[in-house]
Length: 292
Image 1 (cartoon, rainbow, N blue to C red):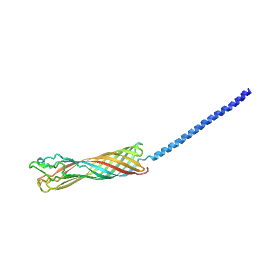
Image 2 (cartoon, rainbow, N blue to C red):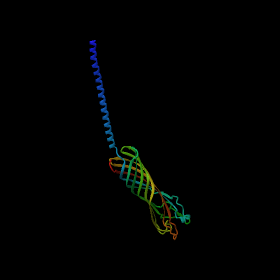
Image 3 (spheres, rainbow, N blue to C red):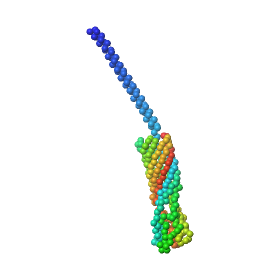
Image 4 (tube, rainbow, N blue to C red):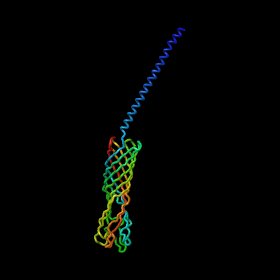
């Protein structure tokens, strides 16, 4: 019994030592695991903070300048040619013609963006620009005529021109971030276009002159229309670079040219109906106000 008891006393402490060793080993693993989790959480928070700091903030005001080109897409249609003498004049089958042209455009813009979601950005923008678009045509469409009672063709037909200078718009914008620093956007709103129509006619006093009296008239207006377009922007620091295209439609501008004088034997009047549209492509650079 004493030998067996001695053996039992020896095994007891050995078993307890093994248990304590195992528990100590497990505790060490748990401590290491806990410290690893804490370290990973700290690293993750730092990475997220760095990513947030690196991602541009698109919200806020910005102001910029642009350069590009404006294509004037104008169609001149003539009606009511010599209305009091229409019964004795032949009809020109070419009563309309395109007076399209291109000019460099310079402009400025300002706007404000805000986040709708982390990906979608909305905004509002106003812009103004200037270009020297202009196109003339001789003869004015619809004035190639002849007298059907005394067969001869008229010469020295009138000359017509269309010109556009400044334009402006106020538009809404909606876009999606295709990268944290790149925005793909669409835009639409109201637009204004300055437009001028001119008509000139030479009169030599001959019987075959289209105009009985010389004329030089100009009619100018600012047309209200609509515009739609889109583009892409890239932000670097507080600077925003863009490429944009917009289409605008300003309806039809109608004016009657050449004052009627009942004391002369001919009616020089005609009505110009010009449908004005523009296509504008531009590159811009803007500065976002405030912090990044």
